[in-house]
Image (tube, rainbow, N blue to C red; front, top):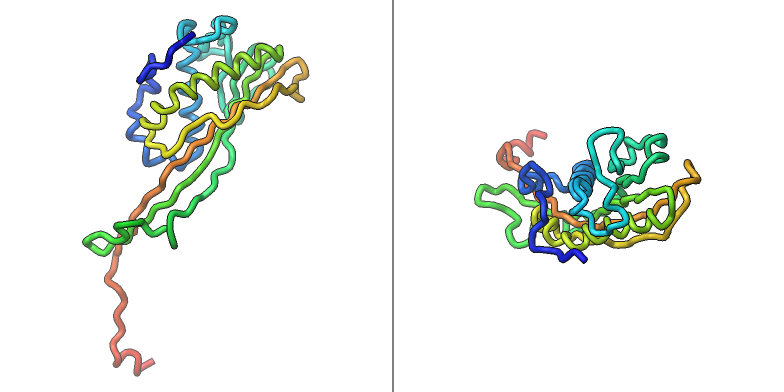
Length: 214
């Protein structure tokens, strides 16, 4: 059994994750992050916990042992030949922090610029596909355990307010290819969006003489 450590056994990405924190409210970025994390997990056999699927090694070629990609780039002819993890983002829901999204505690800075903040909660579903139901189930468990065990590290590096595997669904038969089965793994997360409106002009001031001329 693999014991989770305080840090991943390999980097989550070659780029600086802290530089992406401000873009966490963009769903397409989270899709890319999930793809990157899973590709690195399936990059070498020793990283894979379940011995039954350690042969599923990801490579950046069409002959890869496992396809890990966004559903928008899905090609049925590829998944019919090999296991896959297809990534789909779900709806984003806004959670208000206060009236008008005005920042709590420090609504205006010393220059009179108002500060705002709000929370966004979203989720991605990772569809684990395989030719047999048992293999799809094993693949889903591998994905779930990796994201659960390293969830606190991922949350900290990305500056998220929440990151957790919410649900692992039952085994389904893929309608587009009946010889394939899939198990959905849904991951939920939350992030904060903060912004400041810069005052470009002084507040409008009307004199009594101007009002009398109207």
